[in-house]
Amino acid sequence: MDWGTIAKVALAIVGIITAGKVFFDILIGKKSNLREEYEFAKGFLDDTDKKSLHPFTLSKGYQAIAGTNAVKSSEIEYILSLKDPVQCLSDFILSKQLFERLETEGDFKLVFQKKYEKPFSRGWRKAWYLILYFTLAFAALSPVLLSKFFDVEAAKSLLQLLFTLPFFGLYAWMALQAYAKLARGDFLFKNQKQHTSNIVFEGLNSKSAA
Image (tube, rainbow, N blue to C red; front, side, top):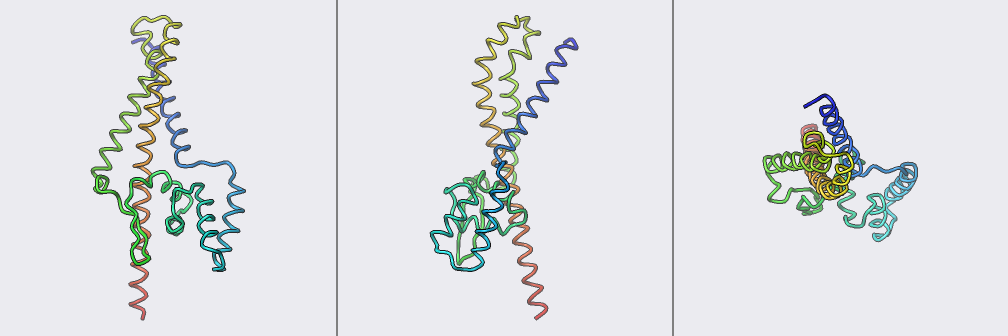
């Protein structure tokens, strides 16, 4: 393998990682209208403190903050109570289908579905999807990366790329999306555990003081 081929492979790896970061940023909900979101969120949350909003208005307000009507207002309200609520809300919207959402006696919490319950089951899936992403991304760019090795003309390589890039690129994106859901769901669950532990600890301190 000559230096030209090595350089191509190195550039392709950098491109794959860069593309992955861009896709990941999209998946976790990067937005550009931050000022408008701030103004709306501030006005709405100030109104909720007054306890005067109709339940319909309250639900719609929380869904507007989340940017989707696929979640309940009680879910959003709970997520916003966690540490780093902006990130947690994006994580929840992305990974909500991984959880069994339970609500008992007004105590809302997130619990993983049975097949994602154990850390090992989430860990091997994340590893698998990450390997799958890099493999498919490499396959998408393979006509260019392997053209020198198989002595294929540049014109033919570009023609092959028109077929491999859309097909394998799509599945690479799906693999990255699946990885992102598990990774962000894991982070959200750990954040919730920290939040819950803090509540229990503060409650014990209050009882001791009494």
